[in-house]
Image (cartoon, rainbow, N blue to C red; front, side, top):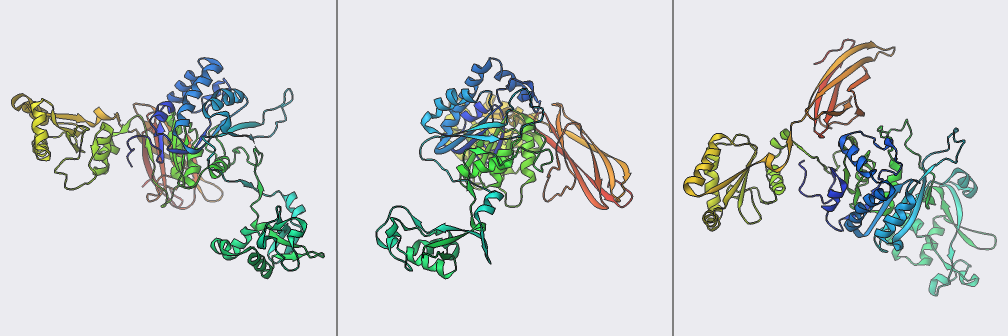
Length: 585
């Protein structure tokens, strides 16, 4: 799918300076922002990916100490506040180096002190045995701000601890473990909420009935629960065996463990581990945040279909979780590697029902554009030029769009266009709007604009003849005049048989070699490549292009993808037949 014009959030990964990109996003178009900006640690290890975009950003950010860092962050925060919806929320992740500065001089200034909701303390690690000389730093801060008092928030529940379960859920029947809960609440009400039921009247002790609607809804459905009176609910629960009476006649309700939402999570989070070395979600990104952390934030502050923005994409955890939770998303980063690793991560978790997404780079691959869907390409390149594309594919009289002043545009997804195309386009422009055609000719303005990948000698000569002899201007524009083009890298793969192991699996050394004028960024590998499912990386980041892998007897397809420093990529597939003898086919 071709990148869409503009940067209004729409499942998109964008390579570039987030300040420039944030400025181009429509105001009040985002529901939730999570950002994990580079911490003010003033250490070179902050350069993680090591590509040129990240290094430039690093150098700019640290050129003037803490004041410069705060100004750098505040400038971006102003834009984030603008594009948040009035109901939107922002979560900013930072550590102890600058958290006080960030809250006082950035967040309070931009969002207002009144819109501060919480400082979430996330314990990301345990103390190390070598922490002898000072008290170790074990936590990060996540500042939670909203744009107004009318914001989206859903209570978060955590797992019930084993000790609490054993102490509280002391009873058990055929349905499972349960505890006894009160059926009354404070503030005596008139009517049946204060009426007697089965010999007990809560109003006599200054309370009123409080039927557990969640249990009733589970039994009869939410709509029926709303229609029932309090006493009807109590009677239903009694009939179904959910109510027990004490020796004094006080009723209680059985609250089962399997229906419990868990314990309410506050602003101290100790139940989410940092990404462990053996975790399946680990991608090799040193500051990778766990998916459970982003899942909690996204679930508590957004709804399905809402738009989530991460302007410091990093390892792509935010967009990967947002995509899985059926949110729209936008991820921005200056690092080619961050964008491409996030793309591979998204591709790995996708299925037939996943919505499409696009990747916007600094340069575009010639082959991708040249052989894209014709109508999709026409619309896209006209929008990139700043024109208006036709909505309909048919009945356009050979015209694909127009400039803002109405001049017709035709797009040819071709190279080396000949003279005959110029003749046909001239006639199409005149048919499209004869009055406009004559006006532009009189004013020595282009009567039409023709976009193609390249133009042959005959086309160029005919355009010159029309201008010189008929005072008629047709403007020729190449795709490269509109968007920067590059050639995708090349990649080859070789195999070296290392022999059989003790379990009968064949061990192979696979070596990939990429070539690109821009330079090679990294390789990724899919050891069980399926053409229908597409590339799903087993190894996301391989800097040298070499892997050793074992294969059981049978047929296998191995795919390697190479990514260059422009973010362009190529793939090579090797078919293997393992039956004691290995050969490429």
